[in-house]
Length: 177
Image (cartoon, rainbow, N blue to C red; front, side):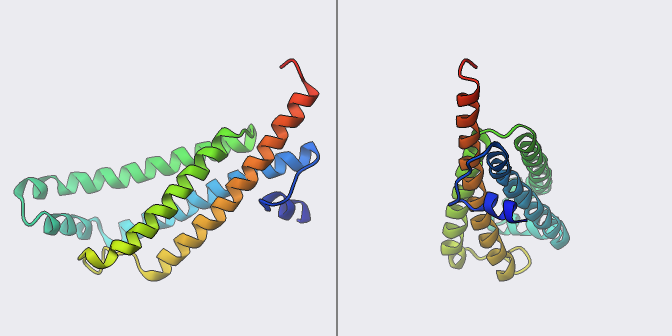
């Protein structure tokens, strides 16, 4: 347990290969945390009903018949796209677990940073958007999302540091490869 706590700490330094691998796999934990939160969000979205999302789209388009005709298709595509992104994230998580590298943590550091900025700007503009009560995310879900993003960021930083140390160890051990 103490080894994992050291591995997921973004400020700790790995000195051995097992420590570096454990630290690099911290990014996998961050990815699976993101997948778990995404599944909860997807279930919540499907629970409020896609009809509420369609109604919000039609209302924001001010009754445009073209939008009314496409709203169901757009909402369905959003749900399927969300599910596909969760599957792709899970695949990245499995790849990072099996073959730790620096690219995946960097990618997810950028995505989490973008997510944090998007969430903050979304909160800033919430008062300007007249969303129906059923469509807007409840406060507890928004706060939980911020906490999850911050934890994910720390895990991806730890994963990058571990993968970098692992690459250093590999280069020192196998200088010609």
